[in-house]
Amino acid sequence: MKVLVTGGVRSGKSRHAESLLADSPDVTYVAAGPRYDDADWAARIAAHQARRPTTWRTAETQDVAGVLAAANGPVLVDCLGTWLTAVVDAAGMWEAPVGEVEGHVLAQVDAIAAALAGATVPVVLVTNEVGLGVVPVERSGRLFRDLLGTVNQRVAEACDEVHLVVAGRVLRL
Image (cartoon, rainbow, N blue to C red; front, side, top):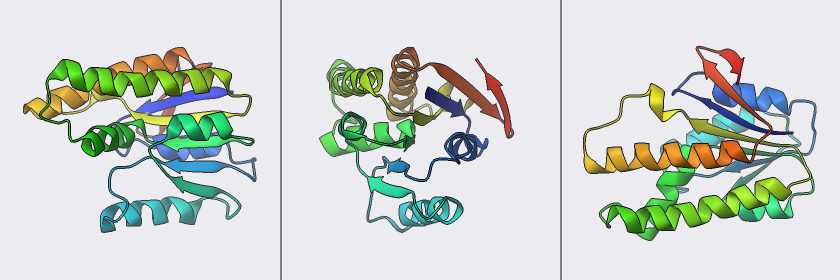
């Protein structure tokens, strides 16, 4: 099972993703975010940990492809939107030419898609559906929207299913 779960902010997509692996005691939860020392990020991770089984492990990393390639149990990646922000932040590329940013990000997305295609364990990935959200008019907002749309499409191609979550309701696409 390889599932991409997408939806808007606070749509219930993370809870739905967690429910897909609820019967698995040995899940690796990948918190793929930008600032591991940020108090808001730490609170977000703590809230997710509080509602998950205590046997689930949390890996705070941007190396999603590496986790997938090494996985010997189910993996939940939350979320590709925060992963994208982290990748662009870490490279200091928000002001770089769009083509350079795309090349940098898409090389990593291709690695994720390849690892996902080769995964023999259940994998659930969470992402934001950029077509449903308000995007800032600034260059970085447009860049994020366009890149995440492409990330979502490439990851969806490597998945068996895509679930859209809106107001806690799930539509399997």
